[in-house]
Length: 204
Image 1 (cartoon, rainbow, N blue to C red):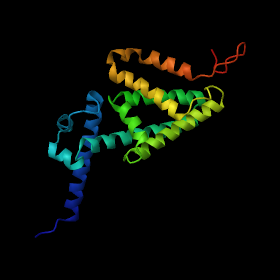
Image 2 (image 1 turned 30 degrees about the vertical axis):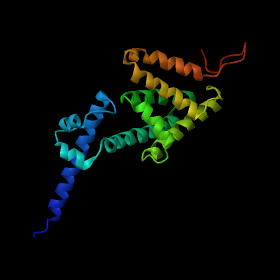
Image 3 (image 1 turned 90 degrees about the horizontal axis):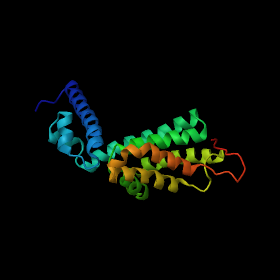
Image 4 (image 1 turned 135 degrees about the vertical axis):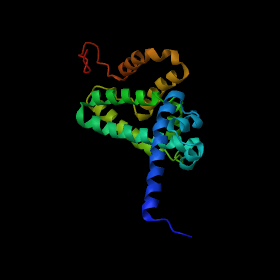
């Protein structure tokens, strides 16, 4: 039996990695169109690979979604840290929450998956999801310290409310054009309310 040369082995590994990246790129698009119940056959077709190739990299739908969602959660955690360094606290929180809604809104069914993952310590996504939540919690805490966001809101409240907006988009796509208005209402509810006659610390 002739052993494969290192060059051949490296070439096969490179081909496999390219196929994996093509599958992930296609999956981002297909899941964005069809939601978390997207057809794996459509993913393979979009990636221009056989279904068998897809299954070699991702044996189940859950394995593929796990990779996609970990990317999103890690990206959102990094974005929170970036905004915390570059914007004042209330603006950083607002910008992050807006980006969060846009990111999760692209995947129908993700709102429910997110809350389930946060509460399931055995989930392979729990660590990434928790890191994202903690990063957002730091933004919330700084915004509260600045006096712009009401102090009686915690991270659980924040994610319950923001996921409610995602749930509305899931259940009532016809309300999608009201998304910006609903987000404004949501943010208004987070602002501090001055005592009667006192100036509003959040501005007009």
